Length: 319
Image 1 (cartoon, rainbow, N blue to C red):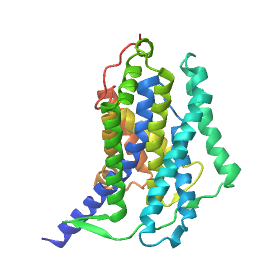
Image 2: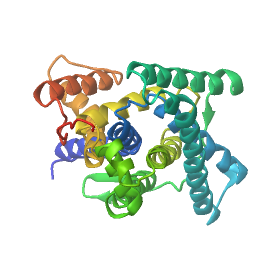
Image 3: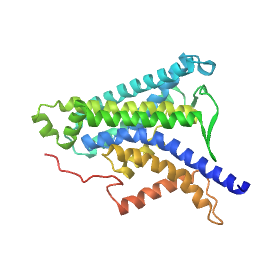
Image 4: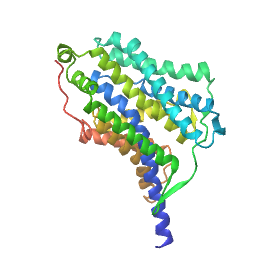
């Protein structure tokens, strides 16, 4: 094989792997947006900060295990403990947000809970950044084993394999919970009609709280994976991934769990591969920041052509 062709194949395969890696994180966060919207018709703009809380909970857990000094089998235990701690912290945060900021406004005009969500987002971001960290970034312990697995011209690091594999497993478990359990049936019933679900004996408040909790657990897991992959975390870290995840949910069809997953991977690939494809045009040399421009331009195009998203469902009126 010609060396130039091999080099080109390696470059594009690396872009695909990077896109799938970031897409996995977007997909996990997007699940929270799409579940809450499906049940309450509410865009939970504080979800990015729920993701941030999970990242810091995982960070603190890894430090408790010894930080960069963790070795051997303890690495596995430390990462699992970090994921569990992150999921628990994010879940607790989301449940408190739902009870304090959203439930009192459930019957208010739609603009009121939206403003409340933005307010909670700004409060949590500044509370962590200015109240605890003095605006400084924290760096995740680099404990994950280094190394790569080769698939032809494609090279995938152990961390990327773990991130993509664990993300897929978490999303599959969530989908099974929603589709195959009584709790999931209750959530889907409330999403169809809160009034009818209440008449059937379903505890609507409980179903809504569980919806927030499940989405938050996914965001907490994503926070740990983000920290392990990107290393740096801070109180304001939730804004951009949160907006990207919301974009992914809209791309896939907000309210659809498979759509959120598809939208996350689609957005991740578009950011990386799409920008590099544009750079193949003679005279074009877009910097890395342009990946956001490419991603949101794609969002505009898809919403023009398909307003409900790729897997969007027709909206139904509530009883």
